[in-house]
Image (cartoon, rainbow, N blue to C red; front, side, top):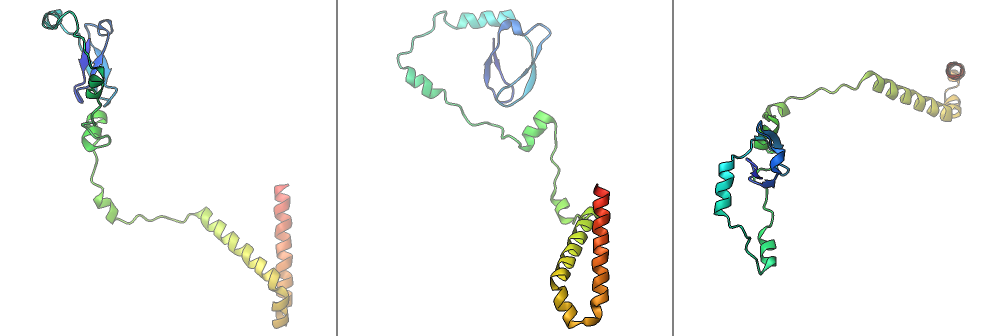
Length: 164
């Protein structure tokens, strides 16, 4: 049985036994359109057989036939509004109103925690490198620097005990 797609008019050959009297759901392999196909009545098939000759005509130039059966472009563009509406029953809303609104993106707790820890690690690294020159310039800071190094060592020990 020769079947035409309702949307793109592409022709398909389906065996007569595949389509029952109750109908069958078919889908076009080209455009994806779905429809229910019912069997064609026998009277119409007999009339078609009477009109068409029983013996096919012989063609002398086969290359001319091959060139004439080129595929054409799709009539419906994929992902266009009408295609999405027809196939998936989707409607596209106008998003121009949403572009004007500014969406607030928060930095988040964990991002603040990471940035703060990186800042303190960098600060302590800088103090470790510049401790001698800072103590030479400001000798009254020596007890504060010593206390800072003790606190850092205590934090290291407590973190290593938590991990182990």
